[in-house]
Length: 119
Image 1 (cartoon, rainbow, N blue to C red):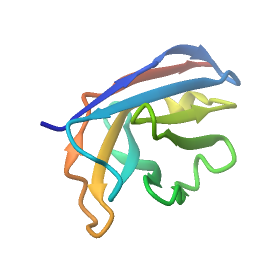
Image 2: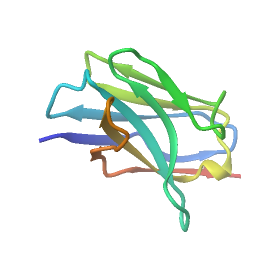
Image 3: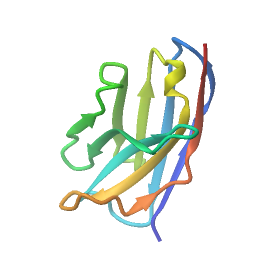
């Protein structure tokens, strides 16, 4: 059974940095892409960043380019989202997700971790 478990969220101040993690288990993810999404209160869930597990190819939403970095640790089966120069508008529940590279739909989702940025 596939499990994605996020951790590392918390309360930080504007301008601070924070790294959140997603531990993946239950299958081999070499043919998968991993994504981070976020959902702020009262808003729709939005794409943040993604990484293809095998190639390491990345993609970012325009709103986080230059501030966020997605990476993976193959040995630990863990994906990270390093967030710097955080802004209050980055406040949201951050979700980890996985999809087969050949498909556009994310099949698996984590439970989310709250990131709150105070001004």
